[in-house]
Image (cartoon, rainbow, N blue to C red; front, side, top):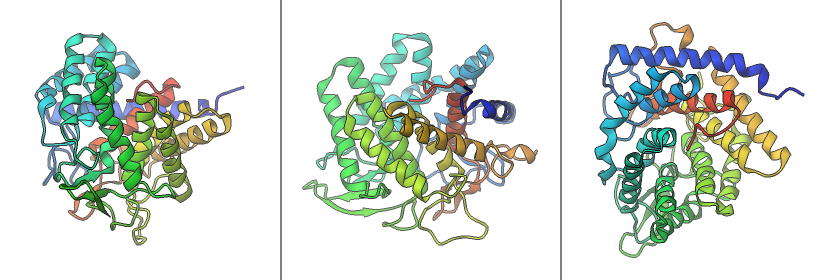
Length: 374
């Protein structure tokens, strides 16, 4: 019997070919650039970046294209764009070291087994663990009082480093963060808050908050996608079943609330806009996370449901509504992404992370397995 993915393989392969063409444009037009979001469809014109978290995504795309094609030219370029990230293994100013190093150095290390690459990853994991606070969480870049849902995408680096070194203390820091986050940021229905605020003196949780979502009580769609992917990843990295349960709760919330094509608007609770203000990056992240989740659940029904949802998202993103191939002047891969709605940054544009996780999900789907991810 044919796999449900087989009819979509030509569509997904064509999308990957388009992604490769767009990557070539960046390499040719903006040598050395680590793009973040487009302005009017063009890279390298960003205004405010808010924080320095995106430098791993374009080299990550280059690594993924190498994995998909086995063309050594992509590997050469990926190495060239990855090496300059090494000093950030000691960067204590951001919570985003997983984004930086899992998308680049981990893929490089898996390919070669070079111990020097492993050492970079371990040091980055140890640096991230230094963000531990009294409330049992790793603080966001905003300040010691702030816990972001986004950090679930990064804490896996701490767990990976702990596993590689056998460091039980490091593992405990990672696990504590992974338990604090659902306690305060994941609601009973599986929806998520963007931020939690803590009393830094006592460690007491004070309230949910947001920078990115419509309001503190709403469900910012990219944050929910981070949670699906992040809790699935830490289940795989830690072996702790409780995180799979959280990932499923978040995934089920996403699937209940997303529209027919499963690509959501930028916040599930924002007033309806006309035309809708989608966030294709949330869809791309969710697709990749749901694919991974389908490989970690035990029941065939759940496995098919999550994988089917991932395929539906990818099929939607491969249409002309979201894929930029019908717009020859557009330099990104996916249309209709959102970076920061309130700051008016990258609204209805391409985003580096949206393009990255879209390519990642496509590579997983075409290969039929999850080892392109984290």
